[in-house]
Amino acid sequence: MTNSLCIRNATVVLPDQLQETDVLVEDGIISAIGRGLPNGKETLDASGLILFPGLIDPQVHFREPGNTHKEDLHTGSKAAAAGGITSFLDMPNNNPAVINAERMAAKKQRAAEQCVVNYGFFVGATPENLAEINSVPNVCGIKVFMGSSTGDLLVHREEDLERIFANGSRLIAVHAESERQIRDNTALLQGCKDVKAHPKIRDEATALEATELAVRLSLQYKRRLHILHLTTEEETLLLRRLPRDHKISTEVCPQHFTLTAPDCYEKLGTLAQMNPPLRSPRHGKALWQALKDDIINCIATDHAPHTLEEKDAPYGKAPSGMPGVETSLPLLLTRHSQGDCSLVEIAKWMSEAPARLYRMKNKGRIQVGYDADLTLVDAQLKRTVENGKLFTKVNWSPYAGMELTGWPVRTIVHGQTVFVDGQIQHGIRGKEIQFMEE
Image (cartoon, rainbow, N blue to C red; front, side, top):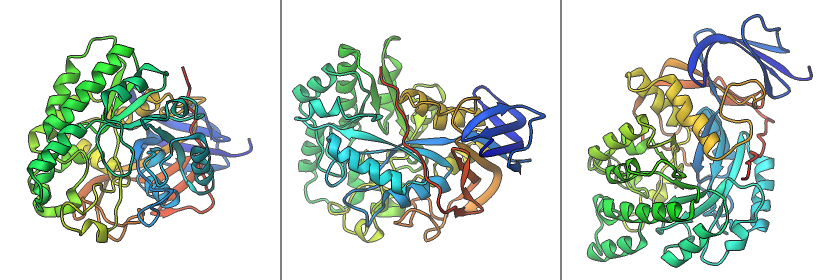
């Protein structure tokens, strides 16, 4: 065997159970699972640790090209590795926006040179680039901003949206906020400098109106739809009423069931500002229950960093977004330590489901023949999140000061350790994720 690794005595998170066993990796692929396996060139004793399938963050904004003072593909992928994330899907609202094959090729080339974990990319929709979004090779999906957010991509007219849904077969991922409602609410609250107005400008009706439209178009055209960063109880109720033959999935970000208004705005100010916004506790409870009930299918972070200097601007000028790729797994493991979810559920939400929904080849499971993307976790390890001690370039977190229970201690990409003992290993590079088209 050219390159081999044997992980012994771990509690392995298999698709439907936990099993204390060994895993053998050969040339970047899981080759055997069970006791009595031969040693690899490298052998790890993982007694007392949990071995997850490599975790996947299906929504990040690593800011490259265009705003690399906030983050870039190298620093963002290092932050992902430190958070136990072995693969990520990055959004196209860059500068320039990634809306055609030429820009996508340039971004992939940069990723191949810089990313320490695996990577995949969305292509961005505009009202004019229908041919491009259906022909750019090997993308995870088409990103549609139904409401304005960071960047200049916006498709809000129903006739433009319908044309996208009616043509092609690729998954459509929507930022579901009604541009009409945002503009109306902004006019009503014009001149308001209090960040607590943010969830009023982007209120529940703003989210629900856009989600209802996207759902209607998906059902009408039988088109795969993924609703990004769900935030409201009302949307979960809509999804509970879907017909059985729908092709609709959705995700939730940990911040939307961890941080709640108005407390988060009083404590964090514009650091808590993001789109869609953080909301009142009833929404967080409904989102968690929908996740447990498989109405919401997976976890994403919407890692969208801005510098502290940028976020320190008054409301109305401060940008929306917060970092999160390093803390999503510890937040979920903390919920596990409190008895709120199982390790198998975490693996489903953060690995199996994203791989399945986006049709990633050989990702999302600890299974023979799958890529050896693996995350070793100490579920008992307690650590406090600290600004200034993070891998993200902006080096702050909305969870600063929070003690979390359960942290990744080793991140393995294609059989190679990229993160261990709090450090990124030099020279490791991830690979482009392969997506299986219909």
